[in-house]
Image (cartoon, rainbow, N blue to C red):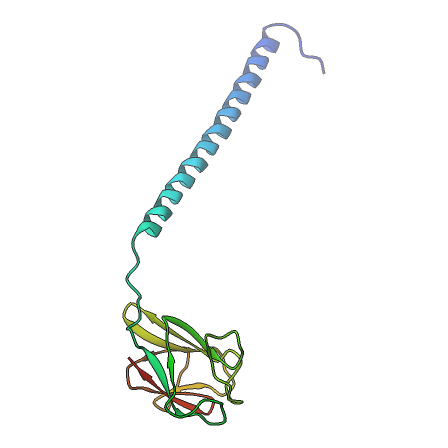
Amino acid sequence: MDVPLGGDALSFDWFILALRLIFIFLIYFFLFQVARVTVRELIAISQVSARPAAPTVPQPGSRLEVMDPAQSSLATGVTLAVGHHETIGRQQDNSIVLDDAYVSSQHAALSFERGVWTLRDLGSRNGSFINGHPVEGAARLSPGDSVQFGRMQLRFLE
């Protein structure tokens, strides 16, 4: 169908041009809004991460004392220094290695955050215990508590 080359064709061309300009404006407006939201989010994230964290320095001298070594190579009375994030297990890549057959490769994690010591069982086969109670998930650890990994009995000291 041919469009006559009169005033109708000219007004149709102007209409198409106006639609194209509006479409381009909307694309740029959308991109501007995306950039604005992104910048706001980045500023918010940087302000949160710039806040100083609460001090998480363990007490000097925090340690685990071996009470019953079971079948491990450790002797009764041996103390193991404890840092603010420790992994405990039979495997050599743990920060505290307990070579008892009943201790799992990755047995437990011990951490000090916001002034509180926490013991978390890492899905060990024989469990972790504080004062004879099984640790399910994470449990608070206090000085003097008896801790058991597999058949090894230790005492937490600060």
